[in-house]
Image (cartoon, rainbow, N blue to C red; front, top):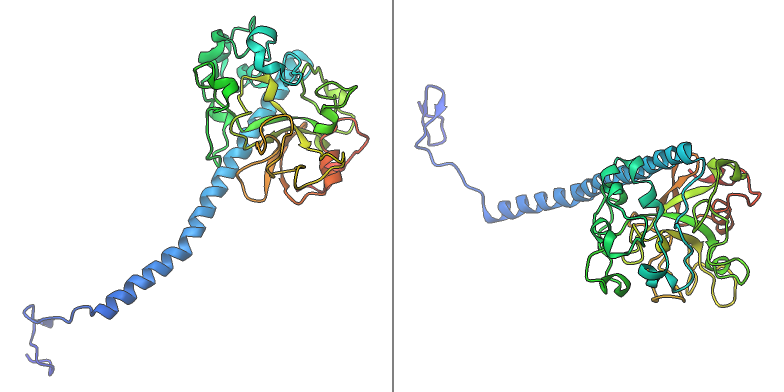
Length: 320
């Protein structure tokens, strides 16, 4: 049977001997272009979905630390200090001799199901002592934000001079409002504005601004000064002050997610509240809640949520 177009139908089917038209070069290029457009449209959505999943895990990590810290309080009746010894400027570098510097991360290992690791810590010597270097190189998963893509071992000479790797973390305590306060002549290195700071012994009742209005922990994207066993770097501040002694958010001052100039150490370290998320960072509050804090937060509000007894109740009400 002829279909009138030069081919035969056999049983209603086109004769298999018939030659079908192929794609022309132009049609092939058009098809490739369409596929490329679809990929370009879908890829950002896939990347956003992946980042959303990473942010969810990061939030969960901080939430787990909230549970761990409250479990610690239930047992010890107070929060752990950020460091078990003072951290006077430069002193922590000589910690193997002079200071123990065990961090709040170390003290809460049992509360995050790391009791075996906790048992390996020699608390009679410094956290940076040779006895503790096997512990110091362990990368604990809950200490790491999934969005972080930087180094996971410090490259700073203060640690590498020992010849071993010291693992870092993305979660640190919020110790005080500013470096200006920290280096005040009469306050010592860390003034007791926050909840966790060196040698602190903060109780729940000491947080008179309210646990839902006071930051406990914050993210950091610092690559070197964030060794989790080292109490000397496990508390940060909200802002740095410039030489004019006024709080700024640019130049030599810094706030959330900016690259600070830390005049007492290496310029442009990322030490402080920061993250590799876009436009903000997660903060753990003393009530165990985890909140997203935007880079555009008002400066006065940000300082208010750092202090535990600054007489700024309901300061966090504007934070989502």
